[in-house]
Image (tube, rainbow, N blue to C red; front, side, top):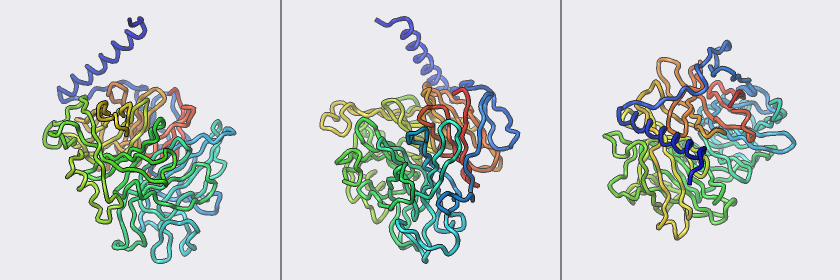
Length: 445
């Protein structure tokens, strides 16, 4: 028998879901007032609701503690508790070989030991930097280069063992003028203190990567792919927490064989708010020298998604964005709840489920969601990544009922990225892509 409080919460949940369903049926989006109207930023950088403020903790071009400089194009980022009142931010830099001038090294600098790849005698500029901050004052105590020699490190994900999985959104190789094939995932310890030796985790596949998340209960890794015909992947490690020991790569398929395309570009096949049972397809030749992993997976029945991007673990479930999904092409958010027997023999009898949690019909409410995080109150904070003639990228809040609100508005022509909360929930860290800045936001979360 439900007590009064649980009854009220249940009624509220069903009411919110009903609101979302009615709005979707009417071609509208369910909205929420959020934290109130955005206030114009006197600094002309980021509008926020009443009671919230930000400070800049790192900028492109600053000298770092190791003598290198802060690179440009700051993208995905994770926050870690180090102990002693310190936190670490591990931050991706989405740099290509043509961006050497925006990288961490001075022109003509020697290639540092541990660099993954180089071209024409120069280290490729992609990689990560790490900032160590005082968790209370937000003062930066040190920042340093932690991964180098990679290409277009877009997003990634935090691990339960205290590291950042940095993902390459590039499958360039020697044919494109670089020394090695790219498209890998790299494990960067948050407490490394220096540049780490770059070792690609090849058993996790080679593709145009975006982000990753680890189920802290099982060690299973879920990964997105930024392509119009992308797949949604999972990696079943042979030894949870030791990804370098190998494992099995799979792609998600819908249990309903008629539904293979989640994008809804040609009409609504996957109804907003609806759930589908999932099954997982084994993939072979995962190092994919021909960059055809997604094509081979789709031929075996894997579901196709519209540019899978940001992914984050919530409570017993994960969320990921599909940047250009939906009939309007403005973006979707998927929600996946793993099976109680995820990756085990009994999974077939009790499969996981995937939901089309949100599909945008209105670019003024939600447009091209990319990186996302789950706030301490269970809301999603989603970074928009759309470029138009007007400056209009927002941080969008999404309630557990799929109602959308504006949490922030970027006032310059760049994208917000890398949103992540400090472990104590007091601070939201955020990157502005270019010129790269890392912000710390505080307020009544």
